[in-house]
Length: 177
Image: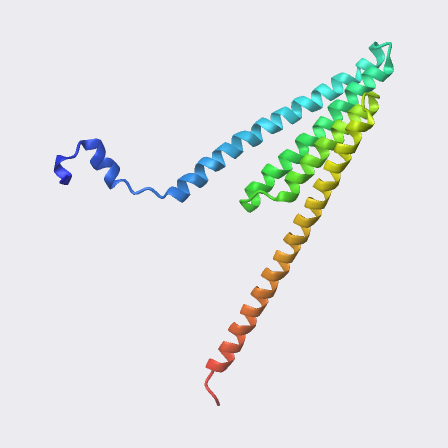
């Protein structure tokens, strides 16, 4: 189909030069900025709720119930902090680090375990799977840290090697006196 026979919008699309990677990065950046803002708002709301919940200690006849609510709120804030740290790290390094995601998962599982232990609402058949999950997440996190350290050492080695080669190459290019 010759260019003149196409409708105007098709010619416009054909002439549109779109850098898809740049567009993708901008859209993802916008989405993560909105998510970060929402998490910060939720974190601030959680902190306010936490401090308002402190007043429940004096109002309640059962102090254990109010402490359970306060501990739940505090542990939920820890999970939100880990998620926020993961988002902020994404903006600085443009990748999600497995360690931060695993930290958030570990904090969440430990939170659930602590809440159930505090409420005395857990049985052995629930403790063992949670313990195994914590162990597996810990092992995977340790592996992620070790792999990251190995990548860093390899990158440092390669940059040092390239710097040595460049400096040796410059010495060879110098005219002899």
